[in-house]
Length: 313
Image 1: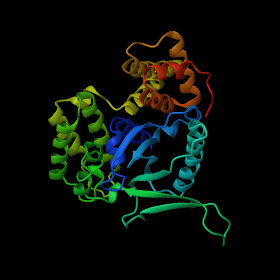
Image 2 (image 1 turned 120 degrees about the vertical axis):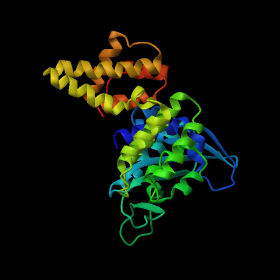
Image 3 (image 1 turned 180 degrees about the vertical axis):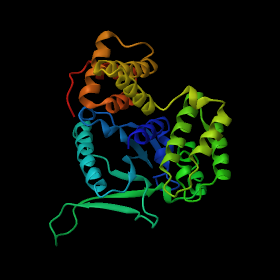
């Protein structure tokens, strides 16, 4: 999903409690213990989509997958992911039982007719009893603005442009709520970036994107121009390199922008060795994968990741 997936994962990491509470049965006490972080995550980095929880004092794990649409391969991807996740939790647990795992696919667009509430991936032989996995389906684009607002968090307000009843008047109120509910200037910029990326998906054909950009810019006095979407920075860097007509120029431009992102996360410019590692990973893994790591990993973890031997994915 490109920019959408990266942006949603980033804001979810800021507000894991709000993410979890939407999928824990109402009224139950829930405590977020942190994101799954094991040796297996170095091999399968998408495991940062899983949260350790305590629900009514009992250990639980929540896995959330953001999906542009409920494609035919989504059940396969969920099942594959659960294999990695189960292995990670088993290795982490040192002989303790693996906690129950709940998987949720948050779907951003698709057919107008209601999607099912539950998906499945069957692995059993035909005619045998079911074996495989079930997962919940949260079709946020089929919800109303009121339903998203009822979840009680600015995290879910960023999905409001997807709502089936999204309108200019309703979005003006949502923009005001996001501005008031964000805890920091940086978070407000990230929430509005995600909000506008959701507007580009436009599953119902509301065609509100230009009006929403204007409303956000009016509200925030140029905030978005000061904090461009990282994915657009990568595209800009590649285009600049192409205009120079040399692969070297293209790579230098990509490294320049990725280096700026590194500096924001770590608090200093990358060393020569770290720049070389960024470039090597961009060549092998692609700029998007490196961008993903720069957004997701904290300072020391990011430095360690760049120092590790490079493995092609």
